[in-house]
Length: 245
Image (cartoon, rainbow, N blue to C red; front, side, top):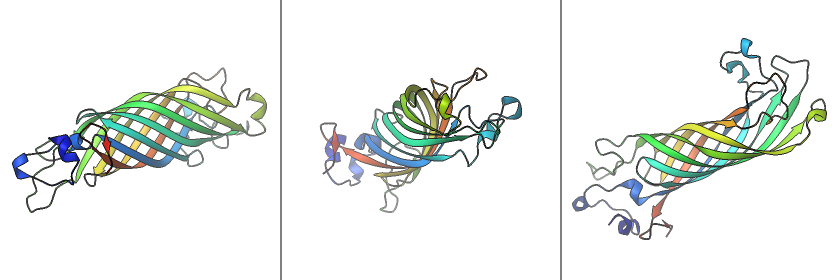
């Protein structure tokens, strides 16, 4: 019954009881834009002078990223997600423990990943993830959705060094596996639209995202993405596929 109703304009039918919104719109397409920052070996403070990396968070290192994702809602709490992020990082010794070294680089990256989301907080009143019967003829869709996500991905990146760093960069185009971990929040604006915010961290299986590593480096690189997001929820057809008509 849920699939057949997805083929028609949505109407609330009191005789049908509560409808599961996630079941009617299992597919979601999201676009996002925001900030990216790399924590590498160029421009950072030594651990003894830096509390949990806070001093490395500067506007001079923040750059732009864009991303899109396609999600499939497996249950009301769990989604599968394919993610594609594009952006760049900036690293410079102008501020850090080695200002006289003078290294600087820009890293352009493309990052595909597969992730799973767990929606641990879905606020819809007493009926979790359900459309509630309106009290005054108006459908109630406003709600907050909080979720965690993780998975596995890869980052393809191109390093553009300055003149001082150039002699040390043996290979400018590289690839590495990454592990994403993040948290997101959605305001469910309507049955078709979400507006959200995501904070995503990445652990890279390389220490070379900024084009430099040394014998003193003890950890691989990590980076963060902070994005504003817009999600469109696609209706599910009777065959279980997206329905666009």
